[in-house]
Image (cartoon, rainbow, N blue to C red):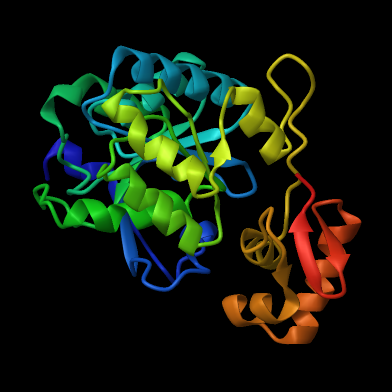
Length: 290
């Protein structure tokens, strides 16, 4: 057996190690292949995505956001592509934080090949994962599919720089379908690679004007101030909480999305309220307290 094969493991959906953040959503893979670690449950995670043909402004912004979020204890999820993805991983690693790449090929393949150094660091200090089996080369159809995993593993998706037809916008759309918050860096007016982000903001995405904005949404304090305020939740609490965002969601919708009995969901909602994670704005309508 080759050396690289020895550190590949696969996790099936029925295994306890399977990421809990993936479980609530239909169409998630039956098993995933991993080199390194998987993202930790109960810790905040942000997907940072954007253009492959990014500008120096976008690269610097992605690196700064990732570095400051990771320094505050936030896990950074991305796709290891050129441009914004790579800069997000680099920024998180620079801060000594945890970052994970979801690949559109087998985990034994470094794609793009020019990211060999980053790929090896991710395996040592974070993790790479994929639904594609080892040996599977990168194919165009794999990348939109892997984006659903990137968004599902995250509490929030941040788009740093994107053209009007950027693949990062697919990730943003998937995140909205999954009930996740989407934020976008506005960029510079007139830049082609800012158009996608500006369109997202026009359509209601949050305005990410600084890393502190994202930390506030997550309920996490900046590094150096105090310990992160993210509360550890039980598995079923996490499932219900994942469907609640800054826009009101009803008890009926939560029952439908989670597949749990209404009484069970209501009990969990009471627990989440007592922990200060959510609040009821009117009868049976709930929002996060971020």
